[in-house]
Amino acid sequence: MTTTGPDAPSLASPTPDSPIAFRHRNYALFWFGRLATTFGVQIVSVAVGWQVYDITRDPWDLGLVGLFQFLPAIALVLLTGPASDRFPRRMIMTVCALIEGLGALALVVLTLEGVTDVRWIFGVLFVFGVARAFYAPASYAIVPGLIPIVALPNAIAWNASSWQFASIVGPVAGGLLYGIGPVVAYGTAAAMFALSAALTLTLRATQSRQALDRSWGTLVAGFRYVFSERVVLGAISLDLFAVLLGGAIALMPAVARDMLDLGPWGLGLMRAAPGVGAIAVAAWLSVRPIRDRAGHIMFLCVGLFGLSGVVFGLSETAWLSIAALGVMGGADMVSVTIRETLMQLWTPDEVRGRVNAVNMMFIGASNELGEFRAGAMGAWIGVAPAIVLGGAGAMAVAALWAWAFPELRTARSLEKREDQMFARK
Image (tube, rainbow, N blue to C red; front, side, top):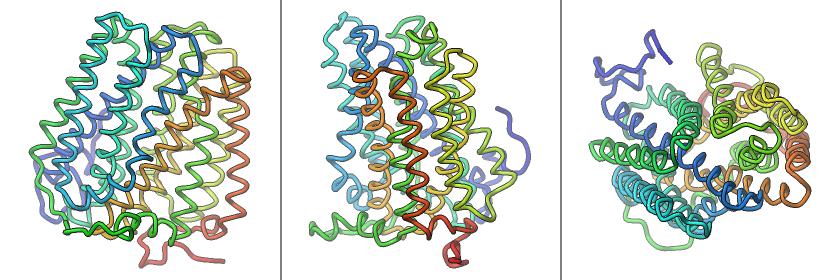
């Protein structure tokens, strides 16, 4: 993707008060490091899903792939947030990237040994999950310390774009690399994690670190903040339950192999389709940002997300399935944009790590736990019915949350809180 204009990535103009995030060296290094990590995660995700399904041919095991990556996020949520607020965030990110790199190398060794017991793979994925549980809140919380506040909205947009770019190219690359050989795929992912660690280690970020006490109040401060802000709670929980029910990523290997008769490359295209839709919407929002009726737009897009899942589950042709996944990704991008803007602009730095740990737990539940839900239902009632019922469930969640959170439904603009972001009717 070629980007031109004043918001294009550039290291040539390190203007101290520039609103363009890429004109600040530290942010540019962070962005490329985070991109490398996300790229590596996407490659591993595609390769592991295909390898596990090759070994067992059981949708249940595809669900376990997500579950083992999610369990550490929920088990360690009371530790990952305080760690991000107490210790240097760049060091946490560096160490976690190195651990993920070692995990990728472990998958290389298991593949070379001809492993047929998927429990070994699940063990490596659990270690991946631990590293990601600490990496995620630190990577989100570090951004305001890399740039002036005036550049934060631009940075949020670029953060979303980096993830979406990796979610487009990563799955396709993962499918192609796995077609060459799983060792090639895992080795490339290990190199991406090593690059991320090297770039992150060079960062210089300001941080309001505190000598946090070990009281229960300190540990649960992130939860207390989220549950005290109904609009934030509504936005996060809406995304949680919609994706938890409507997500279908875990079942894509089964759909690609058994329903659409596609190989690893086709699976890569399917995994990339939501990212294509999401980045197209992100580009549109960069030109036409949400200025009014944000709540109504959000609920409509969550409903569209679920409807697209129903179409994907019913489809028997590759082009319609890929198109439905693209629409799902675009609709989900609206929710991501609103949620991340709320999290960054409303959260004080002294609790940002803990709040982002809670946010990452919600995201992990919606993604990895959603994969487990999809895999379990796929094994129980069949792959297509599981996807269709999940999409219908996401549509029901949109309707229920619109009733339960009127503050979110009547949301207006996405400006700062002090500018009265949300106006009640």
